[in-house]
Image 1: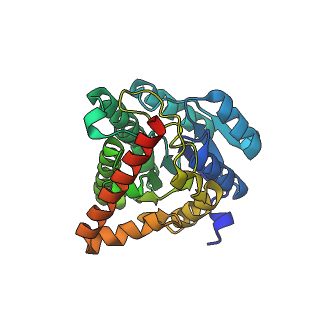
Image 2: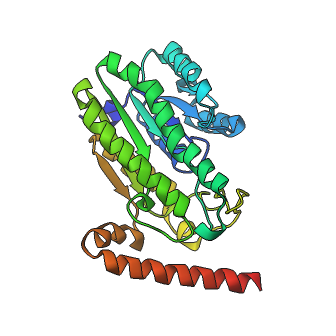
Length: 277
């Protein structure tokens, strides 16, 4: 089935849709004729994205994934508006830039509330609808950091490993209901993820990583993701930088990858030290 026809009039719910990969996915699915549910905390930015997509095909549904009590109401609104949910893309998330020694436990808990428990809670709220439909598709935006350990991102890596495990296990439980589960594994994508990351004390990092700023465009990333979802791939790696090689290095040469990460830690720590002076 041609991809443009495959998504026509399908209901696609995207969290984290106000910027970055989520915004690019919304634009991409709009081109293919999907009906969109756009969620994030920033309603003004969601309205901007909806206008760019063609607001008549979009339901703007502000949502904070840490407020689990509001999710059932959100699901009811989507059902009332469109009658079904064909694809849920759990894309909301935050990153981290701090060492384990300087990261508060509350910061770790905040990362897990957003990147893990929020994704699980919304998925659990949507699943009964898909089971009743006898079909559906659930996706999670994980990360290369969900496959390996990266310095200054202990909490982020832990959270992304956690969602990879949850959604891999979920896939085996829901296949007989006609529901597919896909894990998106991005590398360095040119978004605001580093600027919006949190420091060890929970404050906004407000910096830009060179790897991120020079990464694949969000638009190119979205096209690869949509193609993978169209094929119902279980795992969708996306990126064009050296970080993507880490996926096979981790598998076949784990000690080599560890040495590379140690070098990256010292390089980053040295850069931070020079900047501080």
